[in-house]
Length: 116
Ligand SMILES: [Zn+2]
Image 1 (cartoon, protein in one colour):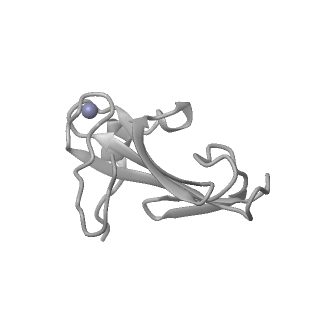
Image 2 (cartoon, rainbow, N blue to C red; image 1 turned 30 degrees about the vertical axis):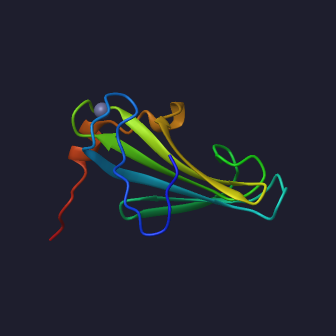
């Protein structure tokens, strides 16, 4: 999939191909080029956590971004990743690795979406 300027692409579930996906956890990876160390900031609704870790970074040497997507039709978790490598930026959608699979549909529904 190549996305060009001002082009909107519909993202599909990596499990059942449905387009009904909900964005959930966002992991942002940042580090200096080639450094093994760097920070990961996780945003999950109103919770934000930053740790010194690159575990799960889709880029082997640079910045990366992972958006966990929960499918409204099959309740499985997919991930959309953005990875910088050798001066290029790669966008991918795939089945979620193990660390995201706990984000089930039931957990999403248990979370208070509206607050008083
Ligand atoms: Zn699905």
